Image 1: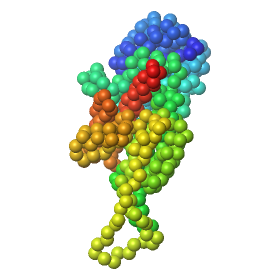
Image 2: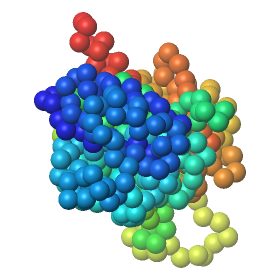
Image 3: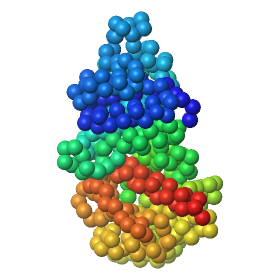
Image 4: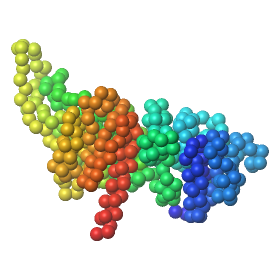
Length: 404
């Protein structure tokens, strides 16, 4: 990538020390770098550190008497080709999402027309907080903003979970590679929600799926740079920003729509939809009246969308979901093998407060050589971690193919 003028914003958090390495990497590759620090950031790293590494004065004041015309925010906003906020604290993310301009960094973010990359860094509980996630959703819907991370793992406070800032080398690769994330250039098809199998014009067979996990995955895939088609059963959720939603009702609709979307080109197929396994063998033309004490339905098996996509000669990287009430690992691994999937994500829907109709979940991702437990956490946070994990597998698969 040609050298750029990169404005690095550093906010208050222990990860601020890592930003010094990011400046070094950017400068070494030929980029011009200027640093803006918030007051909180100064409590962790001194401005002199960034001045020495960047070779430029560090700005901290909104109305800087040493800046051109005393208006540093306008000067810097026009100067930057790219704005990078690393680390981005929960406080800064909240202020940016609401369009506030109460310090130099938020003000120049309002004034600049340059793309803004945000690398979150905070405690796992703060990252999972619903208010933080609402702010993340607002930024994800902003075409000017790209979210980079967070990663998960051990944190300075001793907790383990999502919220770590991506490592400087990873951020450097994302910035210098001019990518929008680990799935940039990929086309992703995701199924979500329940299906409804009609009994008569007013009744149907369905399940408790809310579609929240699938919609969170679609949003996370879009944030990771993918072109996303979401094949959705009937739900009451607003479409994620930048995602094409194709509505379906029955399992047969789901199969036809998903197959058509894959035909158009697909690198990754994720089946989170809770598709009804059976349907009535016929649908009454009129409402069935209540006449007897009992009623019998004859059911026939529905087509299996996930198995059909995985069995294609041109099958994409295929990820299934398994909602179980017992023997979760056993049933998940059986499904992984039997349907010839690349990965399966399993969860115990009998756990109170997790799974169906909840904003939270806890899952285990299984693949041929390993597994990873994610959560309990919000479905948004789990979706982001899953997308990062899938991105790693896609990259490995592409590397292995290139070596043949």
